[in-house]
Image (tube, rainbow, N blue to C red):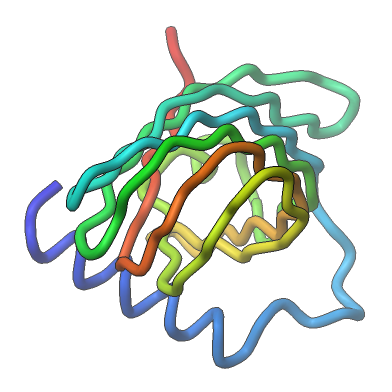
Length: 145
């Protein structure tokens, strides 16, 4: 991912943090994710998930890279709602978040991610492991062929 994509992803994540998803909105789909996060200075993540839309399940892959203070290893399981998904082709892309987190043992938390097409993921999940992360990070979601 080049610098322009990272900056765009970071800006979108800041916008999300400031505004959030309107509580009155109806989700367009549901999502589940299992992800492994790792890092020493530069962190990364790999995983997979399922997008459930209109009763159809679409498996996908997820991967990412974080730049900043990052050390440790953890596993995250999350589920949540997908907003502003007008067509399945808008789902894959680079999703951004900015913030910090610490996971020690087992933790519960939430996050909001948005891609360059405006699709928003509102997630709640659990993290297990030891991870310290203060970074601008993003994930890439793609549907394998």
